[in-house]
Length: 519
Image (tube, rainbow, N blue to C red):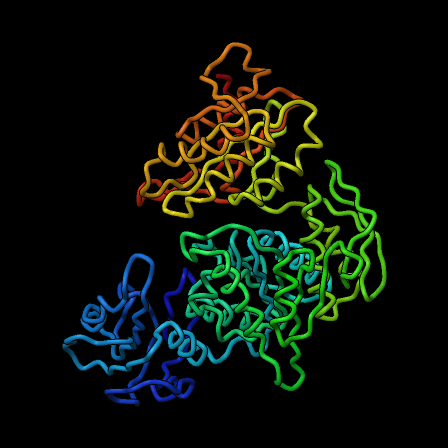
């Protein structure tokens, strides 16, 4: 038995003949022995061990085709690639037109189709994926199911969790995780499916029982370039819903209040279950009341109507509640379990999460890192701010530059005091990112302030401070009891990427510490 080194997971597999693995593929040319015994799989040449099959894929910063020889020298017995140079050694060579697609199909065979015993639920959209996943996980747990989650915060099942380096892992890593969860008794797995993952075919062979669309707004245009290309990537989850298997009828759960949702509902061949606030939606909320204790509403569904009381803050969360409820109902979960699951969930890491602190200030950390998400967070908090709404935020480096101006405008328009700072600057100059944000804030009409400033307790305006720790300390120092401080952008993340270095940094820790130190 051998272990596959995948994102910290250890799933033991018996060695498998190459011919057995290739049975799942049709488009390839082979040079070598089909009886080669495969001990493990990897797409990272550094993880190659004797007897491994190595798949060369093209990544954002590296091309696996450049490491084929290295893989052979480390003991790879099979190479899978789109092209081969002058590779020395006795490894079998398999040429494929698309190595990412090949990686997925190879992983499916090696891990013996782990999804066969699972109900897979895919959640995609710009915002709300994580919150929807947590709500649905709670509902499934109440119903007696055993859900696993592959998402932005972590990968978890049965009380175990491991860090999530990306929202949706590579197909090989995903199949390994599904195998692990299936072996440990999972009945359902909720997968947050990113647009990158869909474009890169990471979930192409996953037979989703339910696919959820939350919404679409600007994000990731550094990668997709246009909103149309971004939407096209998201739509792949719904175009790929597989019908025809006996007893397997997938459902597309779609937010019909989003214009793109209406388009999606016409593209998929799957059954469609709609949700939203419009009366035409099959699952909707009525008589909505939102305050600082949460949301109260009437949940109207094809299975009947029930009152709900959720602990989530902000009217925008009603959409996440409706998405999870609709998905659960499509899986034949009872309405009673749906309501209990919604009401049982108390907090979601980094999603309008209150930070306990010695000064009893209202300090809130949120993952909002898009213009739309920041707007919704600020709109959710504004009714509860008896004083000022103070915002700390930045934008990531080496990512969509166009949203910086938009986020600046949103923050300036909907905040009283803004501290513009760094998020994950990566290899960009933090100062240049802050300056791009500043243009949007200036358009809002807020005026720049120097720090410290006399009477800053009642001041409004904006401050530029590229050091995120200092910016948080400034905001907390400026806050009074009636103010609300929103620290946006990183949410649950416990790191900051500066250059190519990943440093420990947790907004929640920094905010609590700042409340103990008076500037």
